[in-house]
Amino acid sequence: MSIIPVEGLPEIQPGDDLAALLCAAVRDEITPGDILVVTHKVVSKAEGRLLDLRTVEPSPLAKSFAAEHGKDPRQIEAVLRESRRIVRMDRGLIISETRHGFVCANAGVDASNVPGEEVVCMLPLDPDASAEKIRRRIAERTTIDVPVIVSDSFGRPWRNGITNVAIGLSGMKPFSDYRGHRDPYGYELSASVLASADEIAAAAELVMGKTAAVPAALVRGFPYTPGEGAASEMVMDPGRDLFR
Image (tube, rainbow, N blue to C red):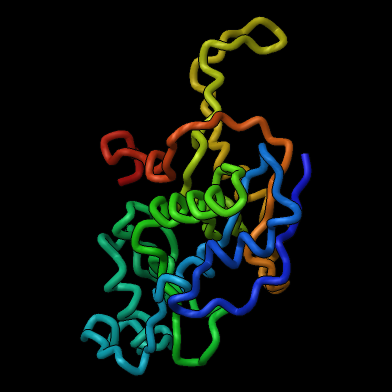
């Protein structure tokens, strides 16, 4: 299995044709069976999901929380607006549920790798649709249909450090289902459903990094299952969530 950084992309601006830029960057490298992982930051930039904090009027809640913890009240307000549900606000941190159903820090609102001190980046409105659009455009331009994963970095309960996960997906099933298979000792697996799309996103992060200006990677040699999967399938149903 190989992970190949996609280099040479320019700074993405709102309205840019990201799929065309990705095609130009991978045209000589992409092969059938590859998986393209794209960080959500360039997807959000191309889709205009940038917010100028100078246009934000903070709410009383945002002002109070920011004053207590030394934060920018405008950025706190941006997080509140992007949140469908607040899970926890404590120690200057906000864990919330986004409109997509993701539970993450700050509703995905982030100021890193964004030009301008007064600008923050938000998650794509529909990351699965974003992945589908990129996949279709690449297939049209290269005649090679590769799955596309849109990734973002999430923290994890009970574990230190962040890791990339799939927040958008097109062209492959998000899981590898081993239920019914037997392990080397003959034991039948009954609950082993691996989040393959998340594992691929995490692997791609090894070459993309946070400061290397590499917003995409090709993952080659992983035996994925083709299909019309979506990252939204990976969001746990509230009825099964023991921690709500």
